[in-house]
Image 1: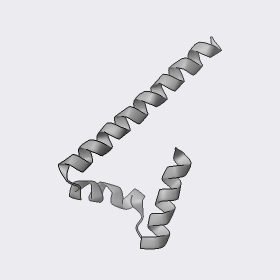
Image 2 (image 1 turned 45 degrees about the horizontal axis):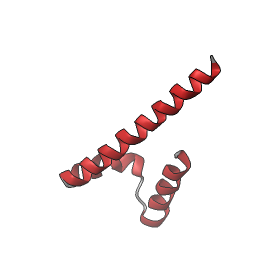
Image 3 (image 1 turned 60 degrees about the horizontal axis):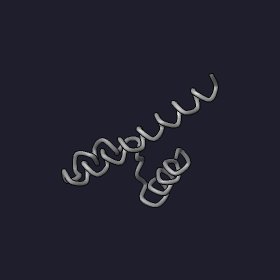
Image 4 (image 1 turned 90 degrees about the vertical axis):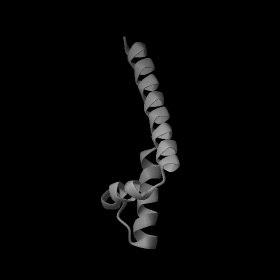
Length: 62
């Protein structure tokens, strides 16, 4: 996942001159409510999947 985030940041910087690490919070405020809801839902699903993987890996180590 990190490599995809980095690739997106690189494209935004090189193509548009936008540093997403700096601009993200400012862009977030401009998004319509439905877009923010979709992003929040996707983030929650990703976080839940990561938590599941960590739980499974810990159980295998014990």
